[in-house]
Length: 184
Image 1 (cartoon, rainbow, N blue to C red):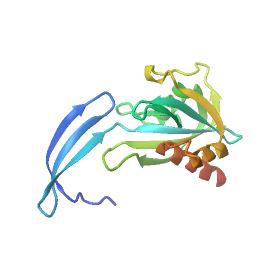
Image 2 (cartoon, rainbow, N blue to C red):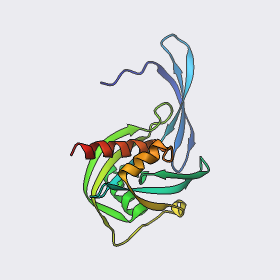
Image 3 (cartoon, rainbow, N blue to C red):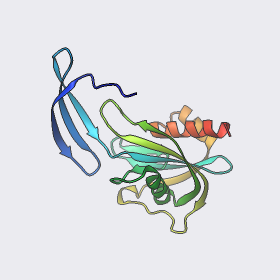
């Protein structure tokens, strides 16, 4: 059940419209009568893929992430196009980033990436029975540094424990895939 908003929106200002995100500022009134501001980053959402091989290896990508000024190890993932089905996005992103497809797809969950200030929803998919696509990778301009690594799932969990994997969506996806694999 969805709770009712605990404040009234008095005014909504679109402050920025960008290629990936928009920024809206809501002027609000609390039930007490005081006013405040809520800044909301609007994002179209994305799909995250845990590509699981029969021997329990998974695919990880390592790429430069500008906000942190460093390379980050992540699961393959990408932004939803306007009106795009999350599964279609997941299938496209797996192919583009890794050069793989998969014969079996299962949605594990959807999560709110940073609900305090952003409306981004990430859809996590488990892709099983992977195969190399004849077309190979199709990296976008900003992904030229991306490298694909095939890693045993147990090693990926150890990388989380050693803080070598710090990306939230990747941690959630790996742990959900491990739990799913254990329950088969």
